[in-house]
Length: 79
Image 1 (cartoon, rainbow, N blue to C red):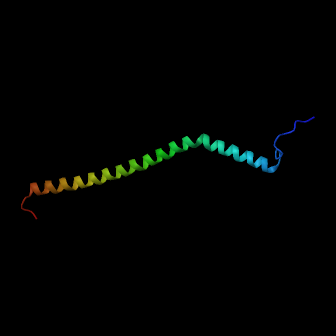
Image 2 (cartoon, rainbow, N blue to C red):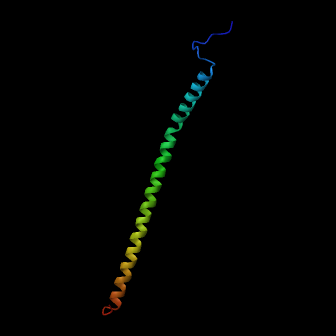
Image 3 (tube, helix red, strand yellow):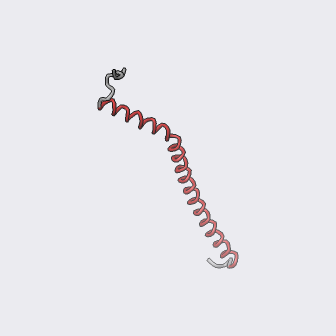
């Protein structure tokens, strides 16, 4: 005599779909920390890129200031 499942929906398309959804959810829960870490690294990369852009802007400002100071020191009467 074949064993009877306790779930009357067992073997039906709905049961198979539900099982597939459960497997997908378990997979997402497993990979969630990795996705979180990836998201954090991506956010950090964007922050570092922004900081790098600010440093380049500051470097440009400092170069212009030093050039201006050098020019005024070499030729104080030039306007």
